[in-house]
Amino acid sequence: MKESSLNEMTVQFPSLSENERFARLAVSGFISSLDPALDELSEIKTAVSEAVTNCIVHAYRDTVGIISMQVRILEGMRVYIRIRDKGCGIPDVAQARTPLFTTAPDEERAGLGFAIMESFTDRLRVTSREGKGTTVTMLRTLRTRKPADGEV
Amino acid sequence: MPVSVFYDASTRTVLAELSGDIDHCTARGLRTPVDEEILKHLPLRLILDFEKVGFMDSSGIGLIIGRYKLMNDLGGSIIAVNPSPEVRKVMDLAGVGRLCSIIYQKHRSFVGGIKL
Ligand SMILES: Nc1ncnc2c1ncn2[C@@H]1O[C@H](COP(=O)(O)OP(=O)(O)OP(=O)(O)O)[C@@H](O)[C@H]1O
Ligand SMILES: [Mg+2]
Image (tube, rainbow over all chains, first blue to last red):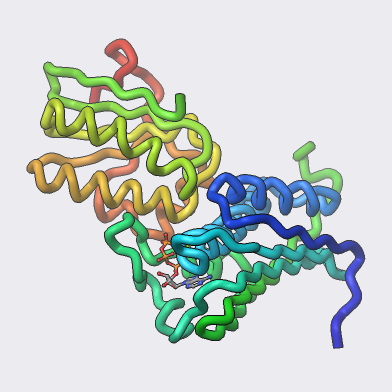
């Protein structure tokens, strides 16, 4: 059963590379009510950037398709992010998640996107079907901060 | 301009001051002027200055590795300067420190450049 959200948004946008920045800003704007610390915010933005870039670079290679991004704020300072494409899919997810594995080495890809998503979130799930598309979900619990923390 | 490139002939150093966000969208625009300057002067050293970079993801890692390979082919080396803590975290995750030194430098002693 789906856990109810305190707040939630879903945006859809075409797989144009200028939307990498848009996706980062949309997520950071949406979760700003939780007042995340600078390092948390920057890690979440990086993880989002990786997932969205993968849709643009891999899923919809040589075409433009729709990327759907859902952000949910859950009880207990938890942020849930789901990024979904209907692109080419990943034949072997375990292999794709291996650090340094890339199918595009000649395009200066490092094969580190999934490794970064994994280390910057608490949980990363990747489900994919060849020819149907890929869904990446990430969960990150933010630290609760006292107002006396010093940051404004 | 997301990148300013300088050449110092006395130290045979190319300095690239990167700025803004480094992602897949911006990487190509940063890469081209840097590579042009490298191929023009065949320097011994490339300094990538990250001081004005606010965000970087794995596309920035690809950019660093690509320049590392290019400089390595020319028998030279690269140095990364002044990354923010956020950018540094991504560099450390990727093991960039194994390819080049990452240093913090406050003072610049030639115009637009960094003397080491
Ligand atoms: N949404 C997707 N659709 C299809 N294939 C994908 C998708 N995401 C990742 N992949 C596949 O998984 C591989 C690994 O992805 P990962 O993000 O870890 O590395 P990369 O994108 O190749 O390089 P980097 O992220 O470091 O630039 C990719 O090379 C690609 O083959
Ligand atoms: Mg990637």
